[in-house]
Length: 104
Image 1 (cartoon, rainbow, N blue to C red):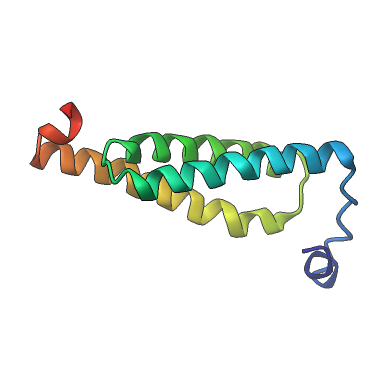
Image 2 (cartoon, rainbow, N blue to C red):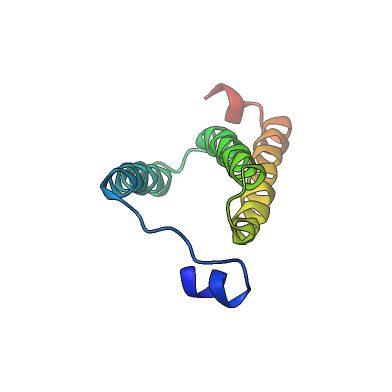
């Protein structure tokens, strides 16, 4: 991503140190496990948790943007917000159509 950032005139991205890589790997592990849970347990109720988590991810990306991180983060932020809204809205839409979705 650093070459793209530099080619757009946004400067080079900093190198990752050991601590950054550690937390990136922790985070990646949680995301992979959550994805597997969502695939294996086809439970509509998990959509609300996923949507809320996406909302938190979006909030942290917003904080990073206002703190001066590369504007390329917008490429990730916009779909994240969209998917969060779709998942939360979809959960409530299904709940209204089928009350056992929210109760089960």
